[in-house]
Length: 314
Ligand code: NCD
Image (cartoon, rainbow, N blue to C red; front, side, top):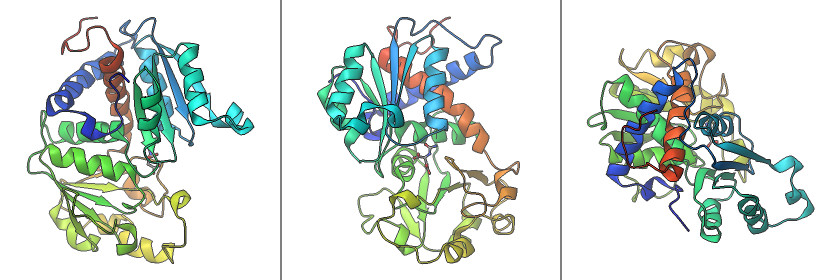
């Protein structure tokens, strides 16, 4: 198996900061009248999504297109998986077709790494079960850094990650990355939606959002992942909303400079009110924009010929 990105732990500190530098260059490319460079001409990127997605798949495909790679799109509904084809056969077929890299999403934790161990080409984890979603964490870190005018670290920033932490791959990747960059991460959720053992997580935790809000710079809301609930662990959504939904009224408890983030898709009225999601303090749309730059950086880093240069010229 070549170099892959399945977890934040796959990246050294130098590589993380290199990816931020590359992303800023590619975000500048995105602002051009013709937002395209020949960096990956002749390469083929396959997006293989066994779970639904809007922004992540489109973002990777746009990133590949803007680097002039060809894109192969696999969607579960029309695939041979419905005829009983195994994950290994599907992945090997896509490699044999000529893909140079696979971007994969799957509902099983660990599945992307497993696929990577079968193939000779790099794989990028676009979300595996409740495990990890490394490019989401990278784009979130970049968004926070740029907002607070920090270059490559987040020292001293206080981040609350709020809601369904238990089922969230976004929370797992973000907790690791943001704390490595120096931020103080607080997971805020009802007991039923927090992992039982947080002793290995580099974070604090709390059950009371209202108490945490006055002390944070970033309020990172998560979607309630009902599709991953095996039983009714949350007896009442209304009850959850009453204590954890980010309404305009509740946001009033936070400091004036605190920003609101969410990986999307947002469920308006459940974890976040429409008013807050659309307010100037919400960076949700900036996150989506930055996602293209981060994914261009990751694809280029894994496939480009000049991948270690910080200032490729096009
Ligand atoms: C997240 C995901 O799929 O893990 N969305 C995303 O990638 N932007 C979060 C979610 O689905 O709630």
